[in-house]
Image (cartoon, rainbow, N blue to C red; front, side, top):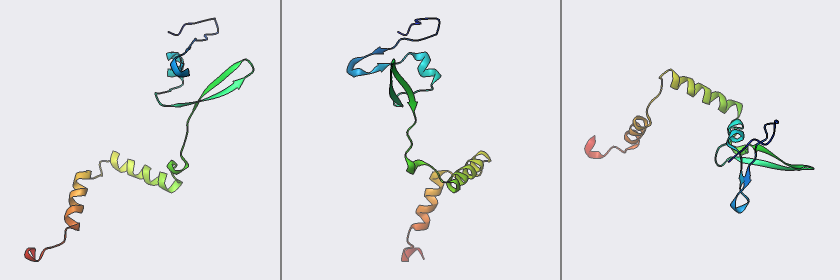
Length: 104
């Protein structure tokens, strides 16, 4: 659908149903946009500027100490020093089980 319009390599998109903007594939790929990503619209004298917008939840940002722990954990995984979740869960299930009088 996108077509070159001039030597400046401009691309043409389209306004679809319910005001959806169809952005040419080359532009989407160059900006590394994916379905569900947000974009910011800023009115300009001669049009509209559309920019990718990365939204972060402040609660989702790691503290420096948390980031260090994550890096340590990733290094342990790469080195093969980890336990599978099913093994950890199995160990927890057996350690939390009360000892019955008949088992002692």
